[in-house]
Image 1 (cartoon, rainbow, N blue to C red):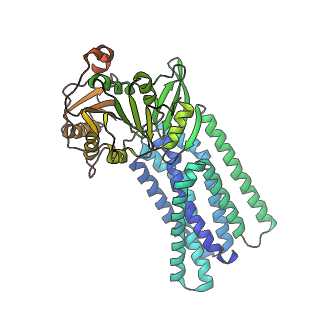
Image 2: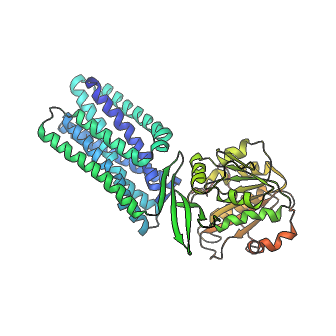
Image 3: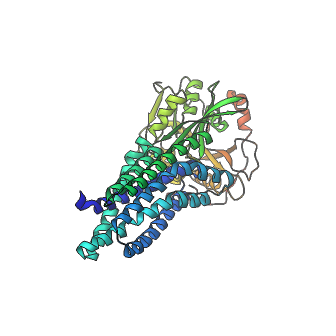
Length: 485
């Protein structure tokens, strides 16, 4: 092992660099989301930090190519990594409370919290090249093999974190794990250990554990309403217990958006927009089968099964962890024979299913971001193809009606008009038209089959229709969907 210690070090540090990048997205997502802009910011910050690290590491290695200096750098990496849980609360949460510029929050916090350890880890490769060069003098070969090992480590770390570590252990355990790996690696690398070094390493170890403990305590005190903090394959999920309007709600937050919530006393849905899905009962007399894309806490499917005793519903929810949480925390009866759950991406389900439906309900926002692949002309054509005659699609959209944030509803309205025979738009609340809000878009295939006997039941919802809504923009396509983030 001693013979290949530098190679092992480069591989491990390369792997940890990429694990940190994935962890960064999870740590920041409850505060800024995980849109394309946020991912771009995080990746850019990490690359800048690594570039500076390679440059500074090379200069330092030329000045004093000592393996003990390399050990101390890795020890510094362990120390800065151990600060992540504490800085999430102290920096990210507080910054998010004072600014609504999500990109700026992501830029500054990722630079401080993850940029510094990434910078430190990047110094390892040029140090290893210099130390190996002292032995072999083949600079080109050594540089190439070292870069290759670092890259292979990065690939390994990416797959390990994405497919196994994050959904299995969660980000807090991962941060502690990589911190300890770096600490142990630094101790192994250090040559001619003496009492002074061991005391110094002991102090660093105490600091590392102290930062972890303080970070966990700070998080719990800053978020007393969080019942569960869960990392799935796809998202970071918070289950909260929140008081308001003289009642207590249980909520599911995915990234920085509220996905579902129920009144804990009555079990009723808290989100008003979900009741607009019941309009299928008015516009489509005697409908039987429904598909819902996006289950989250399954508050609407549970409501649907209670309200429509003679009807069935299929749910396409990509995240199995959300289904598990819905059963554990939101009273989902997974054994109901009228409920079928498909743990599959919504667009993929539209593309491949052989099923036919009278109604399709789309509620697939992830946090505050719409998955663009479910907003396009091609997606809606597939939806229309699996509708029975005179079927309908009802979609929840978050957009303003007018102003700078109205592009989403305008593009979607144009897209639905291109696909469906008729389209209606509803407001959920009485808000100003330039305010971002829940809007309901309904696309009709064929003729409506209205149940006039149900008008009184749904009159309050029907009166919220935006009459004569128009759009002057083009359609959203798989090739060009400007409304996903």
